[in-house]
Length: 243
Image (cartoon, helix red, strand yellow):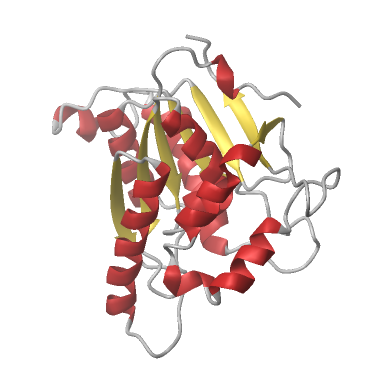
C-alpha cells in the first residue's frame, strides 16, 4: 500500500459524505486535517444529525442541535470550509433513490475533485467485536451509487438538469474510509493530536475526556509503542480519471 495523498500538487476540492456528525473526524480526521493544512478545500455533507446517539435525558431535537454545533466546532479545528446537513432520521438511513438524488444534486453543485465516504461492505470491525452501524453501511452504499453511474450521466435525474441547471459531473477519485479492504495507507502521526482535539468537540459522544484520549492514543500501529507511537488512516481509493 502506498501513501499517495502528496500526489496532489494543485488545489483539490474534497467533498466528505458520511452519515453522522463525528463520522468524518473518527473515520479520517487526521487525513482531512492534513489535506486542509496543505491548502485543499474540504466540505462536509452529513446525511443525518445523529439525534439518536445519546441518552434519554435529552430530546432528539435538542440532541440534533447539540450535535450540529459540536460538528461545526470540530470542523473548524480540521479546517473545513462548509457543512451541509440533510437531516434524515438517524438510525433509519437506507440507500433510497430520494437520498441518491439529494447526493447527486450536491455533487453536481459542488463539483468536487475527490469524494470521501465509507465502505458499505464493512460489517464487522477488525477486532471482531461489534457490528458496524447500519447508517454507515447505508451511507457508503448510497454515496457510491450516486457517484457511479448517476452523478455524471445526464439520463439520471434529468430534472436536476432541466429544473435546476445542474449539469452532470463525476469526481476524479473516491476515498473510501472505514474499510476492511484498504489499498492506501496514510501516516498521520503528526496530525493525530489534532484529530483528538477535533473529536473532543463532540462532547455528547466521547464521554469521559481522559479515558477517551487514552483509548484513542492506544490505537497506534503494531510496530510502534506508547512511548513512540505511530498512527495511520487507511482507505480504499478508486480513481476514475487521472486529471
